[in-house]
Length: 45
Image (cartoon, rainbow, N blue to C red; front, side, top):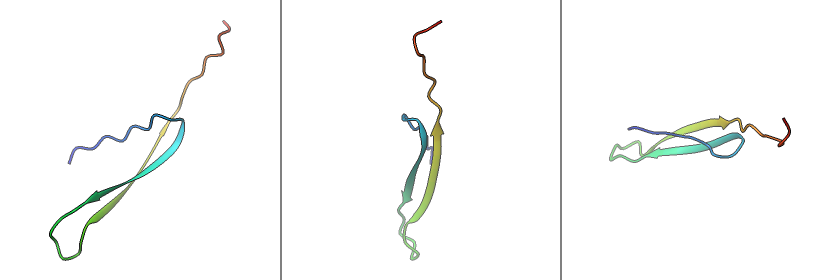
C-alpha cells in the first residue's frame, strides 16, 4: 500500500484507512493524523 495523507487546510487533521480482507478477523483500520502549517502574507513589506 502506498498512501499519501496531505491535509490542505491549516491545523491538525485526522482520517482512517480501512483495509478489507477475507481474514476471519475482518477489516483492519489504521488511524492517520497530519498537520499543515499555512503561511500568511499580510501584503506589507
